[in-house]
Image (cartoon, rainbow, N blue to C red; front, side, top):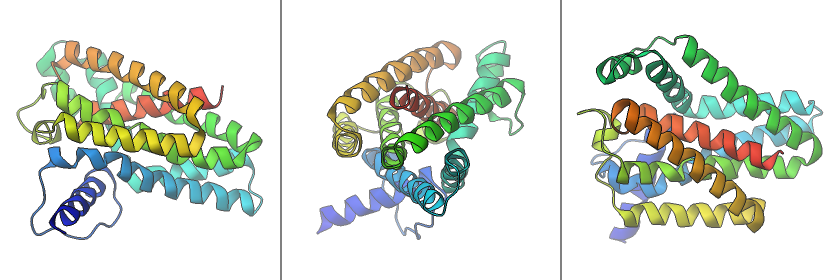
Length: 251
């Protein structure tokens, strides 16, 4: 019973960290590093909401491109644009900073610059187009893909926390750095099971392989740019992995 309560508390913390969904209050929160295995489960909630919106919109006759836009809007509302904000901050910092200190300073600035704006346009545009294509040809697969990619795009975050040093002395990247390989592998196992059930084994291999490559490339870039990971880096990694997954499924 104690183990079950611990797992539920870690799931609750993951939902509180990665979404804006109501998750209640916690008298004593577990360590963030211990909750990383549940990040894909938080993604499943976000993807499930988006899938429900897509299915509902298509059922009442909304055109697939508009239904896709509504589904993406629902997912952004569910997360509060947390990951999109990370992508924009990384684009501005990596593109506009002269040195590591300046890059980190730009990333902490709440304002969005031209690099960040372009990154958001490309990310949302590619996801929107890919989802619209799938929704027009295979609505069931489109709904499943919303859940599957929301799950899989968050799997790599635990490995980034495990293997990359924190770029800052504070923030989520630092406080969540105490994860273990066991926690990360549990999350990966959940992802593999979820993807296989939702999009099939062949698509699972293609999606995960592509996402791993994309996240490894970005991890190397983050190490060169700012010396490690941060909350913004994790958000950008999720966004890039999701875009990569959509390109695989909608090609």
